[in-house]
Every structure is written in structure tokens, then in C-alpha cells.
Image (tube, rainbow, N blue to C red):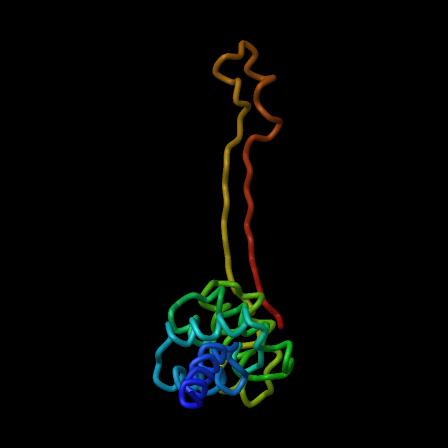
Length: 174
């Protein structure tokens, strides 16, 4: 009789012990997946942990890196920005925010995050702080009223100066 009761208790205990993952398990699993390059598994476990309320800086950084490697730069940015909530001066998060912003052609964001790095990391990335001439552009257009062909009075349908010209020069001084 006692054997059956003990076996029943073990079965019930095993069935109810499927609790939420704890922070140590999530940290261990995501670090292992990170080291092995199992990005899909890392993302799956990490997103599930976040949905269950487990959140810490390294989890956000690992998820950000996994999304970065997979080419999903917007999700990488989201996770690295969340990692900055735990440590606002973290150079790894700022570096990968710089890389992700560069990949989505958001130069303003990239320059912001590069400015948050110390001089040594900025020198390592070899970023020029100023661009005397960043871009030069020319534009020309001839504008007329849309009703011009149907109009009887030629002079009233034309603009006073239908020629539009523009020369642009862009620089980044800091």
C-alpha cells in the first residue's frame, strides 16, 4: 500500500513541478545557446522568459545579438535599448546599437550611440567625428499649372518663375 502511495506522490509531484523557468535556468540556457550559435533556440527561450517576467541585462543583450546575427536589426535595436535600462553606460549595448543603426541607415542614431562610448572604443571603431562635406546635391524643375494645355490665356497659367533650382551642401561638424 505504501509503495503505491509513494509512487503516486512522485508522479503527482513530477506533474506539478513544471513551473516557470527561473532566472538561473534561463541564464544558463541562453548563454549556452549564445556560445554555440543556436540563435533560433536562444530567441525562443529568451522571448518565452521575457513573457514570463524574467528579464535581465545579459538576456536582452543575447537576444539583441541573436537578432543582429539573423539580420533583424530593428528587433536587435529594441533589445539593446532595453539592455540599456539595466546599465545606461554599457559599451557593448551602445556598440551594437551603433552597428544596427548603421545597417538600417539611421546615421543620427548611430552617431548618438557612438558618442556614448569612451575614447578607446571610439578609436577602435575608427569613426570620423566630423565630415566637412558630407553630401552635395543639385536639383532643377520646371513647374507649370496643371490646366495649361486646356487654357486659352497662356500668360495667366504660367507661374511667375516656373524654374526651380537648388544647390545643397551637407556637412557634419560634430
